[in-house]
Amino acid sequence: MNTLYIFVTTDRPDQYLNSVVHCIERGTNRIVFIQVEDSKTQQVQLNLLRTNVYDLLQNLSKGFYKYYTGLFKDKVVPLYTEYSPDELSRLKAKYTFCLTDYIKWEVERIQYLELKQYISSLYRKNKNAIIDVTSVSKVYIGDIFACSLLENVSKLCTFELLIKPDFDKPWNTLIHELEEGKQYRYTNLVETPIFKESTKAILVRTMPLLVSVIGTVLFVALALVATSIFGFDSRFAQAMSTVGTALGIISFFLIYFPVRGR
Image (cartoon, rainbow, N blue to C red; front, side, top):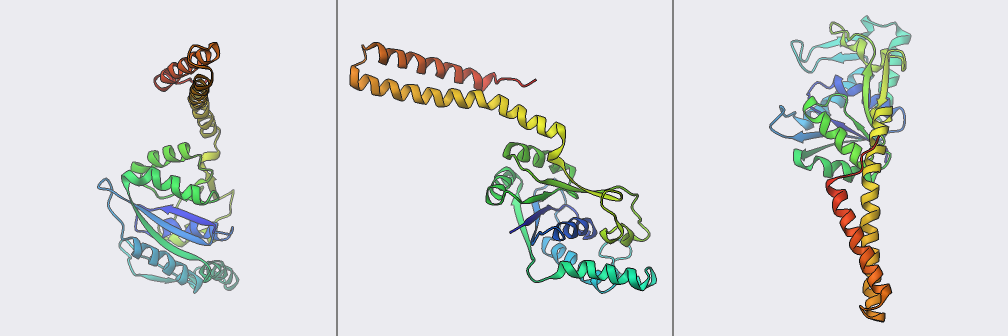
């Protein structure tokens, strides 16, 4: 399945709707809201958030906008007062498309210390998965970036609003009002030149150690085979043993003094 994993740290459904609609229109058929359970941030009612995001989509598909948080909580605004009949029809069709039965809506909770293992696991299962950090707390953004770098994640994305938010009429900041490339971008954060260079630097540092470790194991194995066949006093066995020892020493130094990239 084409899965969108959204890290959540706020209970306002508007924060997630734009990413959800953008990805569904491009083939995503599974939405997973993820909460990192930790004392550093206020915890969100995850099941309620999932319900509210879906409910917001339903309301928009019928031509209404509903407030779920803040001073106007539970207030419903009929959008036919804001749009022409043709505009409202296109708006309703856009959100109706996202309510088909084949789309799965799920929630997952993970402990903070399980974050690296979780990202590694989900990416091994699905290389095309999108990890969305649009609304993630700054407390976790560095951790998620680090895990994505180590696991070579290819789609770490954020919904980037290129216009000033309209707090008086929040429906004007939803995706039906936005033109991609001019008013919003769905940016893949791991496609930046610096991120790519950092990934290469890690490869430069780890590859010599990997080669050294493999070489050590190989030459030690050859030394044992040679010793069993020719005896320890044979020059071949002694040569293999010497090379294996040298590689072992090199591996030791590479652990503590890794090769630096440019």
